[in-house]
Length: 378
Image 1 (cartoon, rainbow, N blue to C red):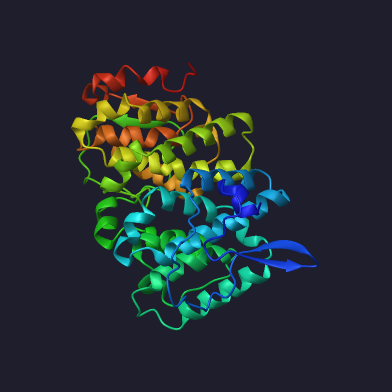
Image 2 (image 1 turned 90 degrees about the vertical axis):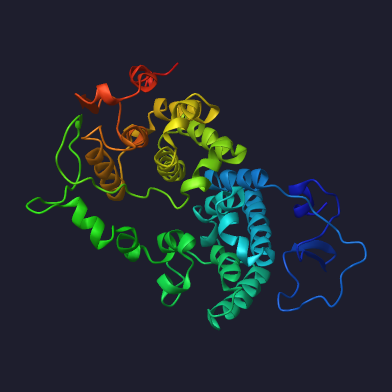
């Protein structure tokens, strides 16, 4: 049985361009035969290998935890599966797919150190072919497909797209920059000039980082600051994650792993991304859906996240700034979406490090009553 077949439970099934070759009488698995060739006709009996984002996610999680030879081999094949998927995806559905469970699995993959592994011969050929297509020009509509397909084969800082802010889709730009051009992250995440003006009214300096004890007040006369964007998945896409089994399962697994090994760097890094996504979900939740969502399975997992102790881990400078913006907003609890912002900012503060200074009267009772127990393990 091939490694691919063992991976997905099919015996002697070869697909996604996989082929078998013989070397010294031993059957070897390779990923692609010739990535430049195109079949002239469809097979009458196509072979189909089933796969799932949940299975791939487990593969990448296992690889990140311990890169054994078997797990490296599985991760390579899973990467090839996703690469092939993006090449065949409809160009007008790429953004939607990137915000789905497939995109979550893809981002999980590129957050690992898989790309730092030396490429196999066929992987190198695959990468070279796609790279030539990609850098031949970005005017063709399929360039986003190719970018998604080839990106996981480049190590951090080893790829650069010319004029990336124009040539990389906006929904992919932040993830691309995090991997290859982190120096542009402050610029692409900065508020617009109008937002900066609102953040720092005349005669006032823009707030830097909130003090360890954040005061949530009830009144204020300063201009209403804009809310930061915490994640690339906003609005309806963010709210869809609250019912996504893959999203909830992965987050639950990460919290469990953190409680087992709170010093695992890969887990800490991935949880930082999930913390932002949790915050973005609350920011985008309509008022009438807040209480039902807080009492849902998603809300239970949110409270488990708070109780895990992850909020006490040191913040990156960027997360400290995001926390400062959120805390600055709820110094006036009469502002629109103040309750949403409280829920979004809680995971950025350790237990006992956020206090209230008269704003409780504007907080819904279902949240006010739950606050004392949010950081307490049940």
